[in-house]
Amino acid sequence: MLLAVGSSCKKLDLAPTDKYTEKNYWTSEQKANQVVSMAYSQMVNSTYFFYNNVLSDDAYDGRGDNAGVTSISSGVYDPSLSRLDEEWRFHYAGIKTCNTLLKYIDNVPKLAEATKNRMIAECLFIRAKHFFNLTTWWGAVPLFTEDISIDQSEQISRSSHADVVKQVLADLDKAETMLPVNTALTGSNIGRISKGAAIALKARVFLYDNNWEGVVNECSKLIGKTDNGTYSLFPSYSGLFDIANENNSEVILGYGYAPEIRTHDEMIDMVPISQGARLNALAPTQSLVDDYLMLSGKDKSTSGSGFDINHPYDNRDPRLTATIVYDGYQWPKADGSKKTIYIKPGTDPDPNAPDEYKPGQVSSPTGYYVRKYYDPTSNNFASGLDLILIRYADVLLMYAEAKNEISKLTEADWNQTIKVIRARAGFTTAEALNYNGSWSQADLRSIIRRERRVELALEGTRIFDIRRWKTAQDVLNGYVHGARFGPSDVDNGYVRVIKRSFDPTRHYLWPIPREERALNPNLTQNAGW
Image 1 (spheres, one colour):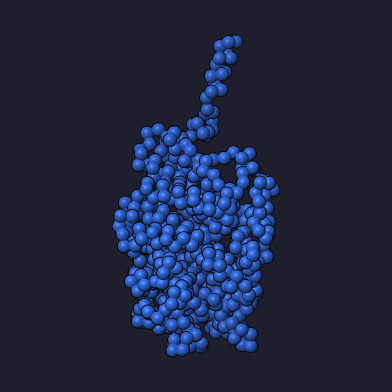
Image 2 (image 1 turned 120 degrees about the vertical axis):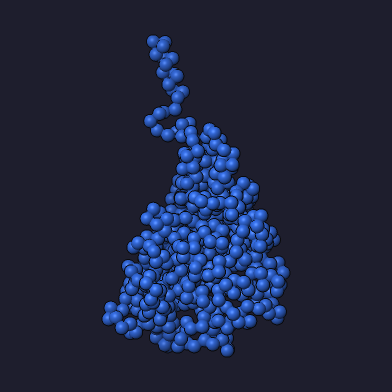
């Protein structure tokens, strides 16, 4: 009997052998790397990446409420909206994975120090990104840097936005010291998080907090430098988003996909119907189209700009054609030929006229489709094209904005940022490229903000820009417009699509999800909700 009791006690001290536990999982580098891979896989939701554009004045979803964006952009949501709960859980699931790796990584035997440091740094970066997104949407959120129990999760209170940002920057500071530069990543490691990514994300954190000195300091580490990585504008703007040019010189942080292995398919509801789309659920707005300058460097409404209302897309900033499909667009086909996209009602020689503007049908409700991120190599729109989360042009634009907010942007700073971005886009005229000494700081602010919009159009950044500039109440109130296919006596013929509402007293922060507050009574609610 004593032998049996002793034997039983001994077995109680052993970890189960038929399932993974905290004690028996961390036995090899391969298993640790699987957890890091899981953290990577939880870093981005492709549906949010694309449909967040609808939260801004850049796009409209006329076919339902994908990811809750129609409800949010129209101002008709409340704390019960499923998108709020889903995104909250999405970020905290990613944080849990990172915290788990950080807690147990020291248990892995014979793990090389360099490999361990890289894994730690990657998880610190990913955790920082999740907390940054949480505090950007909600302000004060629960903050913890160790894995917590279910009981703790149902009692934890919200930490202030300032405290969350402080932790985010601390994680990124530490990650920066441990991550390799981009040029050191070779072979299968190309595309991993690098030192430059940590620096660029810090710049974005400072940008969203209007910490202009912080933005300048971080961006200066990457502009024209090699000790923190080597980056440059890719020669072709449209080529940036070709699968053949993945991980090019401009990409600071990308999110990897692979054909047939790991793909995204949102583009099936964005491109012209004639090109195989099933319907249109994300349509660019007239407001976005209007912000593309003429090749002369002038706004289309300025005298002498060269704008012709009967040919509104001629002689425009070439980034328009690389981003948006408009009436008469020459869509490149795989065989090298081009197909004309007919969107204006009554113009398509095909009697089916699949792309023409028809209110209430499956075609675009604004008269525009999406070109950027279309992958012609994809099989039935299951694309393996990487999503670019931060690129060098964004660093230049952040730097220009911060320098101008500190003190009026100088000609030298202009030449280093806006001028090279426009030159890469295809501008050649002096008015488009050269600095004008008569510009005021306010003039430059408007120019830089406009440049951010068109350079980064449909890349998911616009909603955060108009929130931090506090201009959302200006651009998200009133009618969304489409192309000039409507009655001539209403808004000069520009189609009225939907009327939106943005309440500045409460819409700058999302409400804490109702489900989360039901689970945890210590979660207070944001003002106005």
